[in-house]
Image 1 (tube, rainbow, N blue to C red):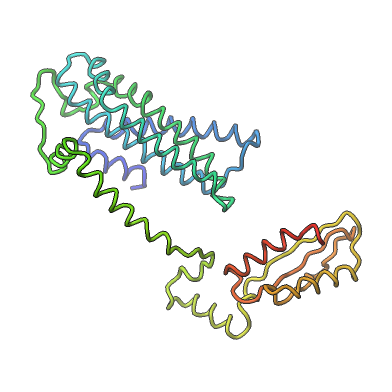
Image 2 (cartoon, rainbow, N blue to C red):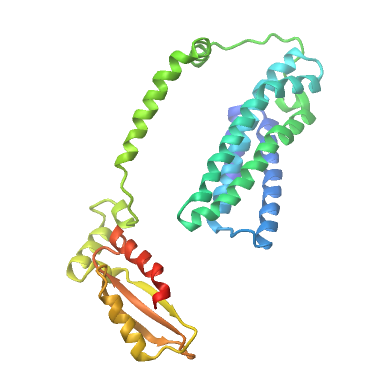
Length: 317
């Protein structure tokens, strides 16, 4: 059994209807086709760069969100089919109740993913347009496409347990229903303490320390991390991950000029050693490639500050 077959089987068991398992998948497939074409056209026009990981993550997000919207729609649709003889009237009433949750849920996703446009890490910024386009299309699909699909199939969507007109609607009394009733009656009484609790939880963000060292994220007893640390003690941490610096010039770079630049780099506090890589100069002599060994951990703030300093001083060289 592959992933698709397993997904269909699990949905059939949970929803007890083959069509209820298939309709969201059909909707998701249509949404995916639209999103894929839109992103492809935008990328071919060079409006933005599409990362390979973005497409994979977007697909997972797409199927999850479309399934959630479908659950909202057909749960209410089943109830309204018992109250209305016309499937169109039942769907109109259904959307009158679920369009706001879908709209605000989708809008929250769009706005949340839009924050990736402000990410410092460029690959994450490249995720932003792909995710935002996908989320926007999913929002439109939740309000229009899924509605049309369920209305088109009508009562048959719930086969073999088809809701009949005039059938009594039994409202299940659950603990969450009771909580919702209490909250809606006295919203301020719950708003204040919950807001304070959330603020207390976010206070810990003041203790957040940024780290770009992937090694620190691994367990301390992991063999690869232990080996990396032993190598750093025996040689130097910077030699384990040297940086590459490319010098470009409009004029030909002489060896004396290159050696002078190397000496200036080695005098910086965050640099341990600078070495010309192989045939460092290109054939035209206007470009040079250097290997930089940073002092200390090549992933800590000192090394990153050194990189930024080199970038800011590039006009000097």
